[in-house]
Image 1 (cartoon, one colour):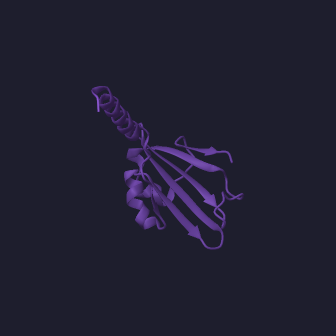
Image 2: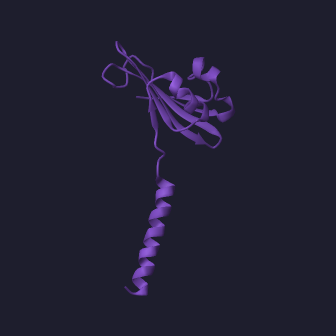
Image 3: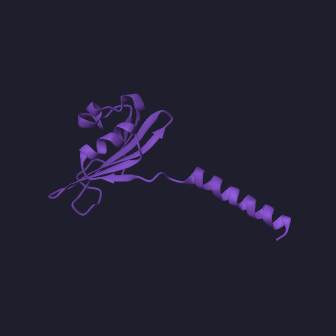
Length: 122
């Protein structure tokens, strides 16, 4: 193998490695109970709570992670077929300062309508 081919191969490997670290999306852990999801939520780690309700569908909370000092998460109600519920308001998108991510917010004020959360049209 000549030097030019080795250099090209090394450059390709470096570009591939850099691209991987820049464009990869973190693996999201999926939970089915609030108690197991809570630690990930409090750390704003990429994760998802799929809380099914046998009769009506359920709730999905997706934590996307920390962005510019805010915890970015979304929430939506789904029907029993796993489709966004037509009875639900739109999906809600929240970007809450990390210091405000608390057990209290999780237990009762997760999607309170304020300057941190906005509705996304269906």
